[in-house]
Image (cartoon, rainbow, N blue to C red; front, side, top):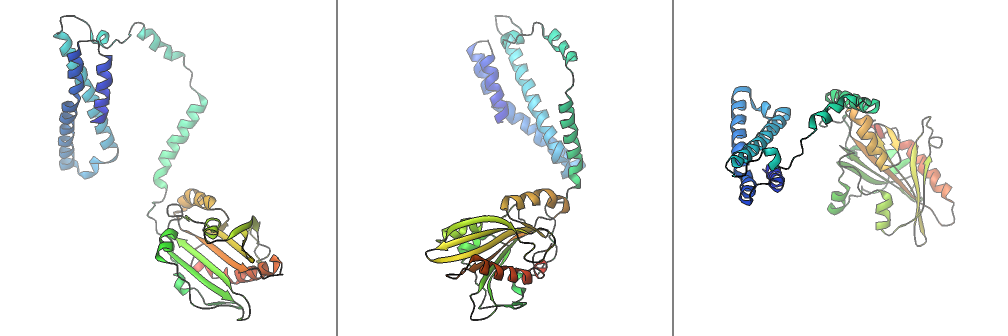
Length: 332
């Protein structure tokens, strides 16, 4: 109804006839739209009865809407033509609408002098190929590979064992996190050494649900000040041949200092940035039918008087022991 009413308003403004003609043309939009929508519903009922409900979707639905809209405009033009016949001042419909048609045919004939644009042809071909290939893209409903729940995560990895019970977040924090599964535990090598925090949150759809609050946002909210942020490749330190990029962050609160590692992962690739992780899901992930992913984080205290390298060495050692276990919980 709104498109035909908008068109009738413009039509009435351009119309050069009497004012009451303009009012009739403007007010006629509502009954014309109601009548034509009634016709559309009747057509839909006939199509569903003879061909099934699938004919009421997709292209048929769009095409039917355009047919109804064009027919409504034709009815509006017909009404204006009838009113012109009843007007004492004889004029054509083109004159009534103040349309300049003189020299229209010669102007249209100039189209033959328009040369095709190579860029436009290339863009059109790319669009056609994209539309043709789109049905081959896996459905967004594709199920992620089988994984174990974090509740089964090993309590001991190498020399590192879990101290205390798993720390669960409050319902409010869990709603903000919006993870499908998560783990938040502390690992240590002995009771005399400070423990390291290990946290990971897994998402069924990393692009849609995503990680709303990264450590760079959450930690300042908890009163920690970010002293340094850098992106580093720690593949050499943890014994990997392939690059393994993470975010290395130093935080402090008063005299307390912490070293933080955090990164994202999708299909086994370590990705330092949230935006890049989502981009990976929307490109290669779509083609592979994989949208799942996770964020991982390790935090170590930096003891007073000790260099950052001591905490870093501990974190790398824990990560070396964790990595062989992670694919069972975060599929690669």
